[in-house]
Length: 199
Image 1 (cartoon, helix red, strand yellow):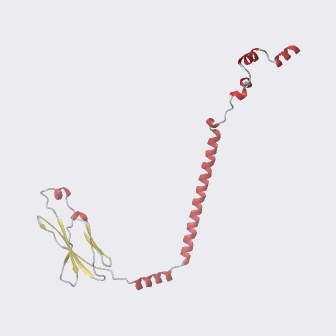
Image 2 (tube, helix red, strand yellow):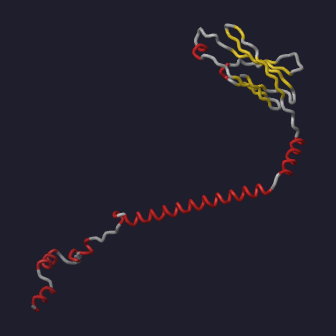
Image 3 (cartoon, helix red, strand yellow):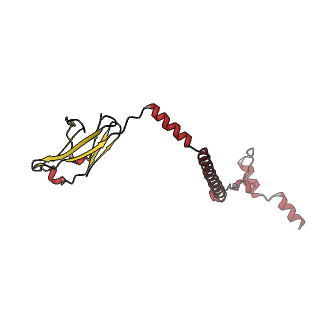
């Protein structure tokens, strides 16, 4: 279950190791450690990672590799019971791509590119944007009409005419004193007297 993925100068080593977590973390556990070494395929000197690798980590990155070079990676585990079998993986890093090569690749891509693809993409984007804009406008108009109809039917917002305006008997001239007001309410009005006289 060991895989090595390489780029120009980096290799990513991944593994999947089945360990019992409770047994590993207990004081009496075997304390399994993972070991990784690598070298160019034509070199006799092995390179080791400077730090301890936990088996549960599942991945480690190897830096400063040479472009377009074949490497051998060896991975194994060890604990108080001994060492496991060594797993060997051979992989080659990608060649270095210069700016000139990148420019050539980009030029080739542009030559194969058809402008009709962009035209179709822009047209589709405009149609989708128009549909969304129309839907938003319709939703806004519906909400605005609904809000206006609610405001018109709200009984709390109906303007009430005060009873003082409907009953002119409560409108009193401030120049009159208390006796004049009392007499005007007790004495019959002139219109009432004229009505009695005609009868």
